[in-house]
Image (cartoon, rainbow, N blue to C red; front, side, top):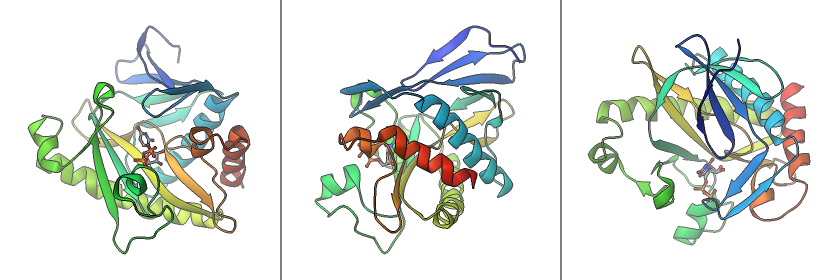
Length: 235
Ligand code: UDP
């Protein structure tokens, strides 16, 4: 499958047309951004690592019966995926409080809530992807209540699968962000990527951060953390 014209370029990925109108090629870049584009850098080989990490995770989710846009990894940087229309929503699952929620509500990072927390954010760079609720999401025309329910339900299932997957690798799945899309025949499927760019992953024993917080917070050894995640996933 050959790349044709570029349809879209985002912060970490490019999307290309293919000769098949149902399929696109997604290319993973090395660029990293944080704090709504305020902090930018290129991390050597991040694209290669995230392409492979996300491909493995989407494969595991497929095995668990979750429908996704992912078809196959084509080479070091490219994946073949189904065309979907992305809902302009981010679903954020929080098993442990960290990041923006810790800050906004003044809760110590690392606190384990008794309940599962799912945030939704409106994907709009100009607004900094604000936290919204279901009524806002519907009023904004991003999805119907029924579509939201479907996405929440898939999100909970994905969380269950990923918690177990990472636990076996000695990793705590602290939080993560996912996105959904609608296929040409109207099915809601998991889209985008799941990688250390989009998850917080802490070593179970040492609590060492093995994710993008190493970049956001200038902790060093960013690439090494992503390599460690890939190494454990490949075991
Ligand atoms: N996240 C993401 N993209 C975003 C915002 C958040 O992938 O645009 C991920 C982030 O990596 C973390 C989780 O979602 O795993 C929760 O992020 P949070 O809301 O705490 O925001 P942050 O601290 O990243 O600003």
